[in-house]
Picture 1 (tube, rainbow, N blue to C red):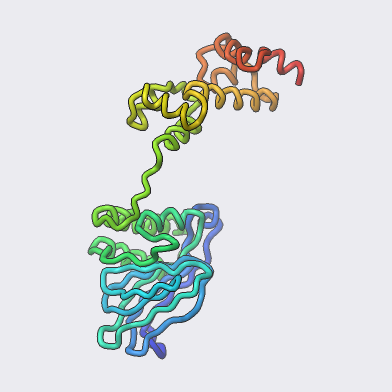
Picture 2 (picture 1 turned 45 degrees about the vertical axis):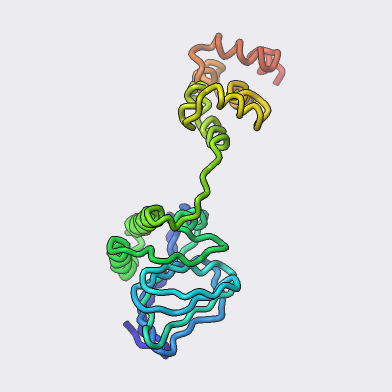
Length: 281
């Protein structure tokens, strides 16, 4: 580590590769330190997310007008464009590892480990496995080999996976179960072309079919079967309008067993056959 006025530290700066930037998460910088008695950072802001892992010591952390004591085993997260400040207890100096990153997966990944915009400090989450992963990540980041970006990402995702498991075991993550009706819609939106039935959807969300159907109608306004049909017919219309596929290809791609059953369903829905609609186009 290099000596600075307020700490001993080693910093690793990373320029995300095109492959990393095309994904959901990419590292920006990382490092580790051992604080001196006068250690204090901020008040300041950064433009990315930065999770700090407290390996030893204790101190104070302030963000979003919340002032909290931090200690060994905790993590805290600096949020983009939020004023923060943290300092070390002179009698028990902080020893930390930090990882800064960005990307569209940052928020959902942080949420899995108990960090939100309103709760940026998680107590007692670190264990030996997580610390070992941090050591592997440090070894990788020291090399900063552009051709090894996939390996680096695999370590970071492994880190979040282990943090997520630890968070669940300690009941540290906020409980935000998805509404099963929303879950059923997401399932149908994704798999409507794979010949799924209402019974399949009800089984997927773990609800009795009749109760599922009644509740779906009350919330969405149509039966699940009509919802599935609408998804198929809307997609059929898009494909027919593109004029790049035959009607038979479209029928089979949407889960129909043959052209006849698709054409009948299409005509019942739009009051014209697929060929008639294509002719009008």
